[in-house]
Length: 163
Image (cartoon, rainbow, N blue to C red; front, side, top):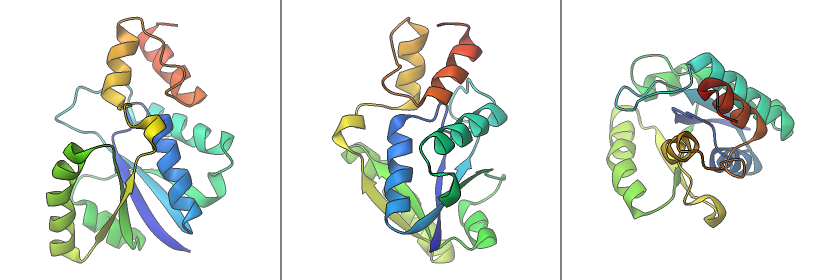
């Protein structure tokens, strides 16, 4: 079983993220979900809340034995991958826009440390879901319960005091 890293801000962790994790595990990988703070995004949930919600979501889905949740330290993703012995980075692609965004980073990671990126096409059921859209819809009073695992929904509701 090889170790792969699924990095992201996961603010919040969505059903799309959970699906990517399931699929990476099904391919025979131990998945390290590396939670990071993205300085270019307005965060809502703190890192520890995100980690707890992700861990609870993985446990509820029966994935806790094949996964772990860690905070991505400051620095290069490839250094983290090297440190934990990860063979690749897993990224989900919802559209061609995601590929345009992800491709240069994947090429740079390969250039810097021969770290490959494995792209998984997002299941069409989740292709419209992004954490930022979920936060926005929720803040405006929309129902996001069918876009999030229960633990993420609970964390989002607690952080915003919106039910």
